[in-house]
Image (cartoon, rainbow, N blue to C red; front, side, top):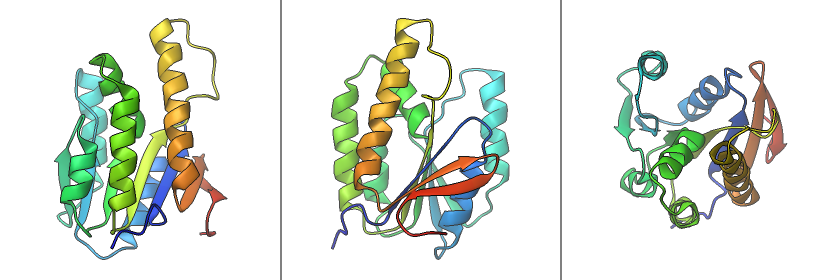
Length: 175
């Protein structure tokens, strides 16, 4: 039986804040095997290097699923296995760049999260703490990311903000 979103942990932080490493440690507390839902797409060499770095931290106990769009299906297919989804904001970027309906994708994601029975850790970049982007697409991305995180945080059992590798629990049980 689904537990709502009490088993969901949302991990937010800035670039290179340690949020992914923290999230991997959180999911590793659960019994393996773990499912890693990777949303990033390697459009250039720098992104390929970032993806390789993330992959190097995971051993054979991880099952990686590369899903640029249909993360809800990946969550459903994972069943009761612990899932780490990294990263919500890369997923949002994919949706925006394809000019798809963000609200529809977010609603489908929330429904899948509510159905989850296994532990789920979601990673997202907090992008609202910096300068105002100069392009309309940049401002839309910032706004959509903020709303996405708010919608998930409202229902998640735990929300953690990571800065300089240090976690700060914003909601839910302490570490």
